[in-house]
Length: 297
Image 1 (tube, rainbow, N blue to C red):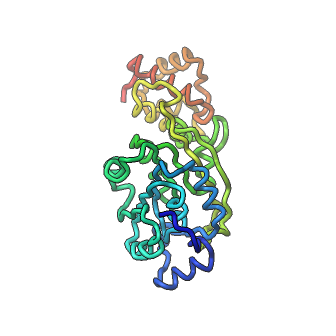
Image 2: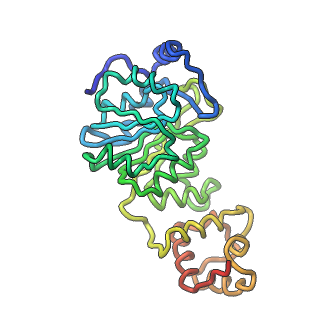
Image 3: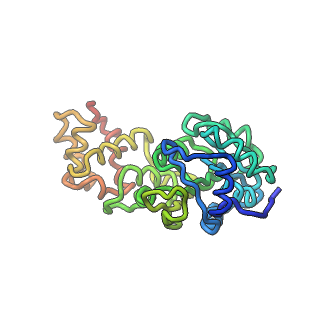
């Protein structure tokens, strides 16, 4: 099951595979293949896998990370959108009977059903992937909001996005994505990855981010959807004050004095900006708006 031998993630082997199948990269799918085995080992290590756990990979490419996951986990489910890669994966992953490739778009698939059907024997499942940059946020939010029974999400993404996910209040990178990710998970940037270890070489550096899924959010919110609506409103225009963003995004103009009074009662200065509020302050704000029934929009 856990075959070893010639790793896929070397420049020579990758070129061999691409030439054998006459594969050409599709820019529209954000395809960049890793050609550094050490980095793959570090990614797999960060996911804390063993044979009693399962892994889901999104966008396996030619199987470079997939085979490393196959060696570390009990079962691997790899989701690939590009039909041209299916015969290649069948070939490169032939030595592994614990890897299953599913053809589909992760944003369209019913992930909960997939986990139930394919990985029901495993209590702990992690998502481990080199994500295409152009859909990173959409995929991450789907994984987090789907409430899948996940232990970790360990993904290679654009360095800037990783920094935004892990950012703390008051920093320029802190935004609604930071709040959302940290609501569901403990976040840390595990490593920075230079552009030189991919083919084709991307224009930016990458980073591996680890999201350790929380058993419960760090704050109590009365209505999760509304909490995120408040967060989005407060970050709608970063240069605007909290009060101005709230008034243009959520409230009727006549409510302005009530909103100022509420902020004052919460000891939140109306002239602050969205990026200075902690996740606790956002939770208090959202809960208080509901409690006072202030919504006029």
